[in-house]
Length: 363
Length: 79
Image 1 (cartoon, one colour):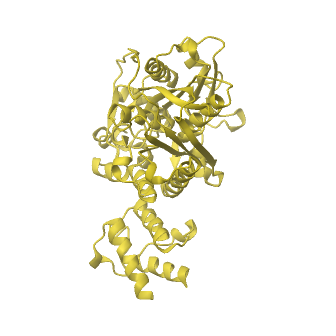
Image 2 (tube, each protein chain N blue to C red):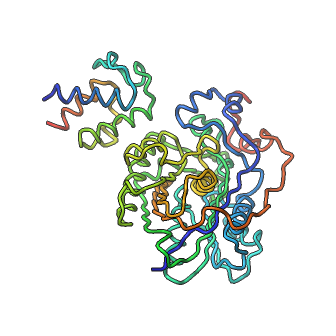
Image 3 (cartoon, each protein chain N blue to C red):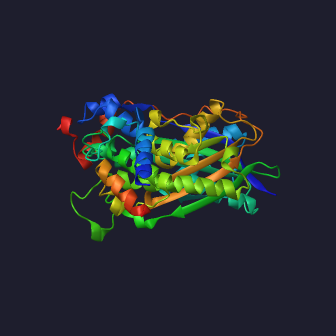
C-alpha cells in the first residue's frame, strides 16, 4: 500500500527571547505564577513575517530530505497569522523558496491544529497518487496578536516555524491513520475578534483592535478530552493500541493540558515530548518544531510509533499516527537562517503596545 | 455506600491534586482555602468524571467551589 512518510524536517525559531523576567517587568506576574499555570519559561518574538520563518524551516526540511524545491509538487502552509490575505502566505513562501510554477501551494488554517490537519491532507494526496512530494510548513507569528494588557493570555504565545517533507513509500512506514474534528459550539472560547487584517468595511470601528482572547477553563477541558479521544481513535484506526505508542507529540499549549492528556491516555512521562518551556504556544508550529527536537534528542528510532495530537481555535482537534521510516538523520543540511535584526525586544513589541495598549508597568 | 463515595473522592483529591487530607473538610473552598487554581478545579472535575464514570457538564462544573459541593454533586449523580 502506498503511504506517505516523513523524509525531511526543519525548524526556524527567531532569535529574540521574551522571558518570564521580561514579563515581570511589564505586568503584575511572576515566573512562578506563569510556570505553574503554563510550564512556559521563554518564547521567541519574530522580527520577520511568517513566510520568512516558513522559508527557513522549509529549506532545512528540503535539505534533510535531500531534495530541491523543484522536486516538490505541493506546498501546504499551515498558519493563522498570515503575511497577507491576498495572496495567501503560501504564495510568499513559494516565492522565497523559488518554487517553479508547477508546484502548487495553498494555506490551510485550522488554527493550532493546522499542522496535523495539513499532515493528514498531504498524506492522503500522496496515498491517492495525485502528488508524490509535499512540503508541509507551519509558520506562526502569534506575537502580533498578543494583548499585553491581558496578563492571562499575554504570557502564553510565541513565534516559530516547523516543516516536514512527505514522500511516498510502499514499505510499512508512514502515516497509518488520522482523524480531525471541529467543535464549533466552543468557537467563542478562543478568538481574535478584531485583528485589523481581516476586518470588513462594515465592521470598521475605531479602537476595536483586540488580541487573542481565551476562556482558559473551557478550552482546557475540551482540549484534554479532544486530544485524548482522537489519539485513541487514531491508534485504534491503525490497528494498534496505546501500549504500542512510543512517543506522543502533543500541541504545546499548556503543560497542564499535556499532563492531563497523558494521564488520560495512561502514557508515562518519557513517552510524551514537551518543549513548551522554551517556546510557549506557537500554534500550528509547535508540533513540527517539537518533532525536529525529538529527532535530534534521540526520542525517535526507525519504526517508532509516533502520535501527533493537537487542538486549537474553532475548536479544531486532530490526531495522526505515524510509523517512523528508516532514517532519523538528515541527508543534507541547509545553512538557511533568518536575516539578523538590530531591533530590541521592546522595539519589536512596541507595535503591540500601540495597538492593544501598554501593559500596566510600562504606562 | 456513601462513605465509600466520600473516601474515593478524598483519594482523588489527594492523589490528583496533591492536597493534604486533613484540610479536606466540607467547607474548604478549592481556590481560597486549598490554593487550587481555576485550571486545578477543571483537572479535579475531570478526575472525578473518570473515577465515578459520571458526566459533569460545564454549567454544573461552574457551581463547584468547595469539597462539600463536589461530594454532593457526586452523590446526586450516583443516586
